[in-house]
Image 1 (cartoon, one colour):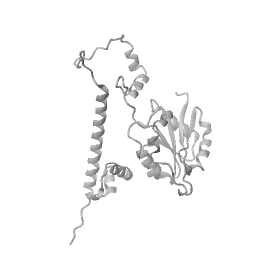
Image 2: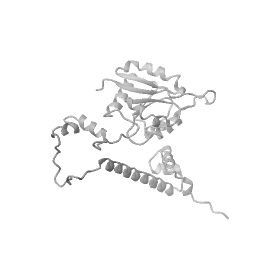
Image 3: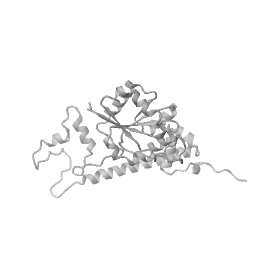
Image 4: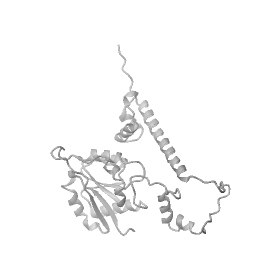
Length: 277
């Protein structure tokens, strides 16, 4: 069990009238949970409409480094800030990222499901219950072997091994970890290779970082090609009807539209042209 959980709280001007009250309500459940305010939103003077979010939708993505210090982040969401939250979640790069938990107020089930599909790890509805609040935070944190980041960490320059893999190997019960097993070999000694595995003699080296980067790039290209072709085929089969294409793909319409925008796919090119004359 962690000694302390550092929980960031996104403070938006549109939520100033209720977020503090809700967090005070669950104060009795905040043992070993420390809250940190993210006062990023600075409303424009007399230019932004009431309830509007002056914060950029790329706020989470651009703050990847500074968010690494936290274990999770609370994101309050209302009807007024739902559109901004959707765009902010969609802008987060793919890969491991800081768990985001929504504090939802006045939203219906369709919007809740949409936010989960866009990246929320979990959500809690107002009014907050102290026991449920604590249980959900702990459940999300315990699923993470180490504090997450918005960007996938690079491989270790010396070993080419993903840092998360080393942490997981060392955390498993009964496992001595990669570092522990390496300690059994004397200085200058290497573990014996498996039978049938290629052996490298003197003067031969494996560029592990290049192999891992190549794998990453190849995987990304395959996924992007699949998404692009799948969306195009779905639109072609429904003659450019986005709502119908989303249904047959078992995806929410907004998520389907986000994929279209990501790959610059125009639905109009799949719609039959009207016959003239």
